[in-house]
Length: 441
Image (cartoon, rainbow, N blue to C red; front, side):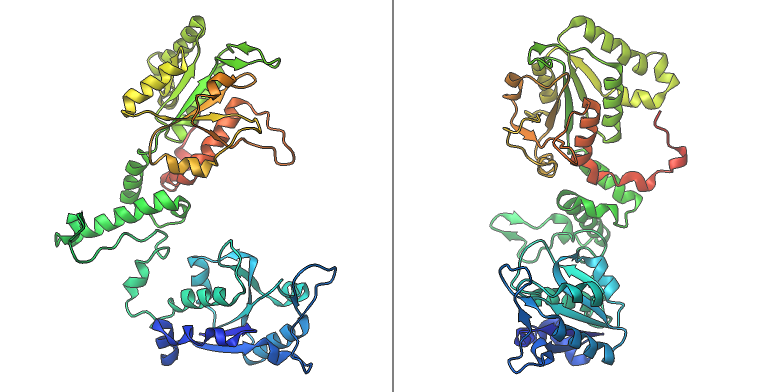
């Protein structure tokens, strides 16, 4: 495979191309790298390759003429060469892209600098734009080295053992398991016994479980594309049980539209929809805070109908969802019950659209779920009264409108969106479901 590197700093690549496996691959001829100095394609005596941007502004822009000549020079030698511009606006580089590009015979990597390249070159003569991450570098040289290393490792013969590549992070779709070496005991920290047991099957099971655990905790979005077997899903399900997100629907104290403190009424739809939401996302429980005795009795009558009455045999799926509900007289009663179950105080997270709040993102909240149980407070009527919100440890970021600040959603809609934003990356069990036999009545 051939790499052409177009740069204004050709010396940048001298040292990296001489060391390690990359240097050996070049010596063996498994890959070829040709470094092109962009200034060699400039026609004026000063070898000018950049100029000030039209419209003003800071920085310089690479001129189109030298870039065009350089691209044509490479295309004349290798007509099938794919032209890639290393750019912050490009698609984020990952292992799948590395595999795809490793099938090409020739790549031209354009290393941008300053404010970038002339748009006419980018729009008409570049095949792809690639970024290696959401941060700013001096130029595209270091990014091109990332591509060369990631792609070269996939060329047969560059890495000695094929299984060493297959076991690496991202190759299997998962992060790699932890590695240990001698001594067995370091400052009191011991190597896991299974790794020194000599039982290779147990070692492989341990490594697979650790790989799944690390991926689940740090990069759960990768699991949606990973190659998972039934035993992997069983391990993941057991790990996910450590995440305990409770919903608490507050009917008192809440506000009416005039700002007065009231106790709002229960609705049949809220109970059904929250229950089905909880069952879908595997929540351990949903609490309904309602101080009015008549309202609690009404809600319990509905729950009993679906869990122990006629509804339990008529619709077993509904029973599975409704049994997550529990009606209590106060928030303190709900928190006491949760503490008794979890044997620790839960973290109380409020929902409030007020701009004065300091919010955390759903992703940040998700990471906290590995540490302790979390209760998400949901308000009815016109929102939870402030004295109750002051008891919250954190507040989750509100749901804002897409075109403006409108965010007056029903509690059913809001809770579904929030739960999906927190736990949606973990919904990879869809792969084992036959949708034709699935029902959500």
